[in-house]
Each structure stands twice: as C-alpha cells, then as structure tokens.
Image (cartoon, rainbow, N blue to C red):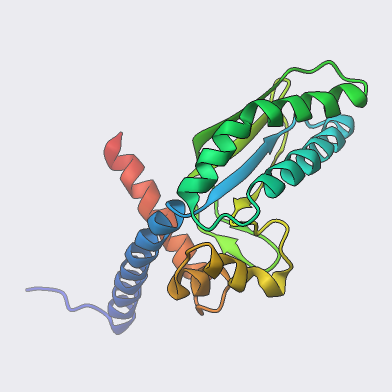
Length: 205
C-alpha cells in the first residue's frame, strides 16, 4: 500500500520545483548577461592592510583609465577590442602606482574568463557564474580581491543611473530588472542559479 504524502511534503516539493524552474530561467538570464558585460577583478598581493590599501589605489587608476577608453562604447565586442589593445598601458599604469607607493611587486593585467560568486553592489547585483573579466593580479595575488563591472560602466555610475547605463549598453529590460532588484524574488533566483551551477559542476565531475 502506497504511503500518502503529507500536505506539507507536497508543498515543499512544489516549492522546490518552482525554485528550480525559476533558477533555470535565471541561469539562462545569467548566461545572457555574461555575454554583455566585462567584470573588473583586482587581486591584492596579500591580506595585509598595506597590500589591501595598495590594491584600492591600483584599482582606482586602472578603472579610471579603462573607463575613459570605454567612453561611448555601446557593445561588449567593441569594449573587448579596446580593452585588449589597452592591456599593456593598463599594466604600465598599475606598475607605476605600485612603484610610486614604494613596492616592487610585479603585476599582470589580462582579460580572462573568471568564476564569480553572487555579488551585490550599490544599486545592482549580479548572479554567480562565469564572466569575462579585466583582471589585475598584484604580486602573489593571494589577498582579498575586489569585484565590479567595467562594462557597462556600472562601477562608476550612481545607483539611480544604473538602469539607464545598463540599457544603453544593450541589456534588456528583463536583465536590468533582475540585476537592479526591480524583479522581486531576485535573491531566491540567484540562490537557485548557484544550485544549478553546483549541480552542473557535480555532473561534469
């Protein structure tokens, strides 16, 4: 004789199914977002206070130079072309900041696919996943790192301007609604994305 499911169990199953379905949709949206943005990822030499302070100075200089180069760009393809051509200059800038602050650390600047956790910023959030990133690796690159978005220029936009800046760079209304929290339930959706990504990694392993 089959055991009947308790109403609470049915509710939990329905909730789990709804969460996974929502997560699958959000996962697709994350993939679309990843094709339209370039993250910024700055890694400090170590977690010492001095190295963390240096990381922020390097970040400011690199971000300012990259933002100026990307001014007026409306698509990621063009953004990638400009950033690729700028890499040697960005590395030079980072090296000069490091030397000016009395350090002899090496530094490497690159564009690379990078795995990011879910991250909340001022005025927007991005779900976990793989994104192309402008990476600045200082010294041993073993310290806490700093994340943001260099294209669209969301790092330098005021929170109230984020939707307009994102739309101007080619994001859809749905994508903007998701990252700016206008889409209610985004936290659960982002958690569902993480669950889906963990499941994919488990199956791939």
